Structures are given as C-alpha cells and as structure tokens.
Image (cartoon, rainbow, N blue to C red; front, side, top):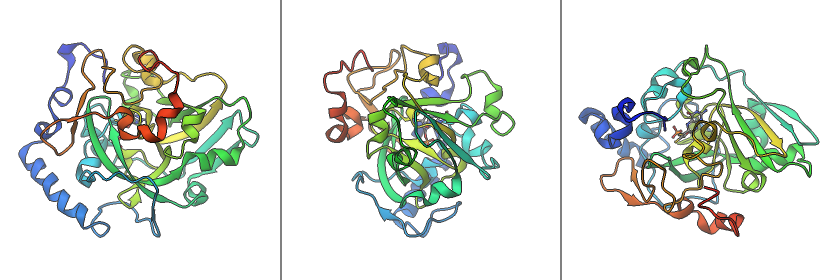
Length: 310
Ligand code: MTE
C-alpha cells in the first residue's frame, strides 16, 4: 500500500505471498490448515469466547489458516512489512481501553471495552477479506453489527457519515514514529454503509479475542470494501455531517478512493484489481464485484458512477 518509488519497493510487496514465506513457514502454514479443521480445540493464544453463535452471513469459502490470518498482516502502526505486526504488537496493552462514540448523536457515550463485549450477542461471521494489494483471505471473525452500537447513541438527522479513529500513541505503537502515513489512522463510511448488517464491530477471530496484530481490542470489518477501510484498534467513532478525511485517501487520492468498494473493473493506477491471490493458494482467482457481496450491498450504490466514486 505504500506510496513509494519503484526503487523503494520491498520484496514483501512485490513477491506473491506464498513465495514470500520461506519453505519452512509454508510448511507450517499447511500444517495450520489441519488445525483449522479441528477448530475450536486448537486455536492458539487469546481468550476463548464462550457461547458463540454462527451469524447469518457465512461465506462458504474455506477459512485461511490461523497462522496466516495472524502472521501476514497490514498494521502500519507496528511496521510496514507483513510480518512486523505479529512481531511488534506482541506486548501491546489493550486494557484499559475505551471507545468514544460522539458527534451527531443524541446520547454521546464513552464505552469501556468490557461493556462493548457485552453489548450484543457475539456472532461468528466467516467473511472474505480482499486487500487492495490484490491478495485475499477468508476469516472467521467474531463480533456484532456496528448498527447495534450506533443505535444506542441515537444518531441525529444530521448524521451522514461515520469516522473511525485508531489509537494515537507512538510509545505503544512505534510505527507512528515514522511519517509513512499521517497518524492517527482514520477511516470512514457513509451512514447507510455503517448501518448495514454486514458491517461488523469485530472483537475476535477463530473463536478467541482478537490477537493484537489483527486490531485488538476492537476493529471494524466491512467485507465488500478493500481491507484498508477496516480500521484497527479504534478509540473513537464520530458521526458527522461532512464526509470525513481518511488516511489512505489523504495519502493518495487517485489510488485510494473514499468508497473503495471491491471492484474488478476499476484498477489501482499501479496494478490490476481483476484478479487476486488467496493466501495459501497457487493460482489467482477472479475478483468478485463487491467482493462477492453484491446481492446484499449493490443497492446502496444505485445511480452512482462507481468509476468516479471508486
Ligand atoms: N488499521 C490500522 N489502524 N492500520 C493499518 O495499517 N491496515 C488495513 C486494515 N486496517 C491498517 C488498518 C489494511 S491495508 C488491511 S488489508 C487490513 O487492516 C488487514 O487486516 P488483517 O491484518 O487483520 O488481515
């Protein structure tokens, strides 16, 4: 995702993921697949979440092995290489943690993470995650619809957009000492997108609380959009009348649109979005419009020119 000159490109950005892993790691990955089929017994670190129910939205795709979901990440607050977040976020403290929900709402409130965990029944949702870099995964997330949270603060009639902000703390997130992005990481959605039942306030994966590298203790997941829309480790949700400024759009407005719906027909200026490499697979597969969720979400964009509003 880095906006860099070709000379600055890192091997991890230009090498297909399965080649990027050395042979030993690839074998570990394959072993991980066996562990996945034995879920829930074998998921590693993290507290188990009891009484999970299967959510309404479950992709039929085979989940990506736990080791890849938690070992091949984008989380620039902990470094720009795919293996940096797992390495550098290991000691990141996520308690105490609060999330302020404010702006165009009648009942602004600061939620403690423990209250968030009890706010609504937690569900397992198996979603495809399509990164703008043309790789994809399938992740069994745990959470509940963001709408459940937003309803509780009573949005006003002026609320047209939602802004998500990640923690700003360069001591705890050393990547923020670099100027690769402007911090804190910010993302945004239109109000109808934020209220859509697919949009998940996410607290876990593979039946356990989120590992730090995946955005602990709470992140957003919007499965029909490129992965960068899914802001991690958020501390503030603000409802606004104006479209918020978002980190990647600010960094490269021609490359990263505000909407960023997965769209095989709109290429990134530097690479095609027509195909993607599913982590753990050898052959590329075609990218699906709205990442395969067109039936549920395309209606929200009726009448829009999705080449212009990309
Ligand atoms: N959130 C923050 N705060 N910082 C980031 O660098 N990277 C994004 C998104 N959320 C990112 C972030 C990108 S580019 C992707 S593809 C997804 O997180 C990756 O999520 P995962 O590592 O859990 O698979």
